[in-house]
Image (cartoon, rainbow, N blue to C red; front, side, top):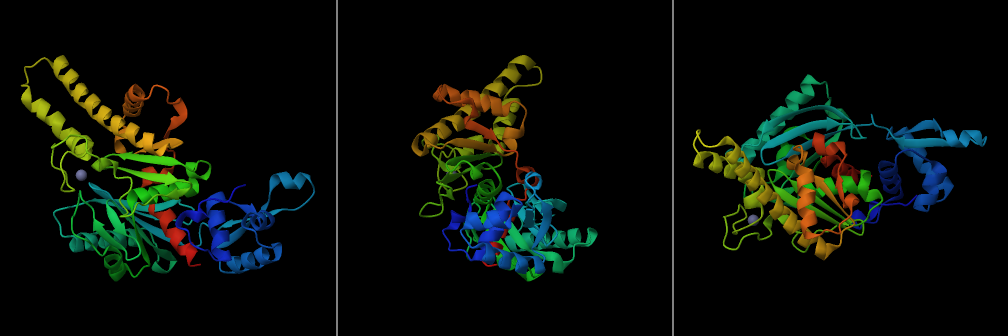
Amino acid sequence: MKYQGINLENVKLSNRSSILLLLNNNGAMSRKDIAETVGLTAASVTLICSELMEEGIIVELGEAAEEKRAGRKKILVDINPEYRNVLCIAVESDTTYIAVTDMKGNMLCNCSLPTDKHTKPEQFFRNVTDECQRLFWKNNIVREKLLGAAVTIPGSVDRKRGISLNTYSIWTESIPVADLIKKDLGLQVVVENNLKAYAQTEVYFGLGRTVSNLFILKWGPGVGASIIIDGKIYQGSNKMAGEIGHMTAVKDGRSCNCGRKGCLEAYVSTKAIADDVQAELDRTDENADKLERDENIEKIIDNKIDMLAFNLKNSISILDSKNVVLIGYMFEIPGYMERFIKAYKEYDPLVSDDFFVKTDLRVNREHTEGLAVFLNEAFLTA
Ligand SMILES: [Zn+2]
């Protein structure tokens, strides 16, 4: 068993944090296996586990089945899912999702509200915390049970200070998100870019456990990527790495939210596609040949898919990733993923069928990608 995920932030962890992160990553383990994996003596692991059990953070699960036959008892320990709850707030360009999960990522309750870009950010986050209070009240979530909150948001984020620097597609000013949430809810708050949070989840719980070079592509209201190199999320010198949506797709092309022209996102985001399809519908009147109109719309969509595939192919040529993980609303539309892979193969016929991976992580559906970020932060200081 290889110990992974923990070198993510290049931080020297306490022994306690190491054990918690290991359990978080691998699931239930025996004390002996923990000691071997993290390189501690059996005695110190036993001691730390006793402390963690007393605090209710971990629990004993009983004997491992295969060891029973050998006649030796092997008790497993794991993180106690019921220890505390975590509030996950996922701000996306159209909708903001709120969920409360346990320590294992099981969702206890959730709700959502539209992301209103015309509201001032301060007021918007007050609306968010009001919704959170209502959710807690309706579902009997007591404040003492909440360990803290994670906010995931598009664009660049100063994680240390809990500030969203620029969300591009929603607001352009910097927003002290952590302070705004903390003021209303009195919780420890971690803020992270939504794709980096997703990548962290993939590193801990998903494909990242076995594959150390990954490209995560998100296609939806925004277009973005997260790059995992040698098991670490690659940040870039301005924390802007992976902004595939802002690769230039057309010289002197459409204006983009980022202030530049011709960015990929200005052509292939959900809104850009919807606008172009609408323009086609407006162009042809109701009496037009329906078949021809449908064909034209499919051509528009094929063209968008081709643009995205072209830019991904060039990114992969530079990065040489082992796999590409496809996430986001657009890949959920029946047939779109297959069409995308077909378009990609026109640029690289040699690519193997298992190169593309559709994620089965539930955080993608449930918008709870903040949990991995929060647990990482909480365990680092444990
Ligand atoms: Zn742009």
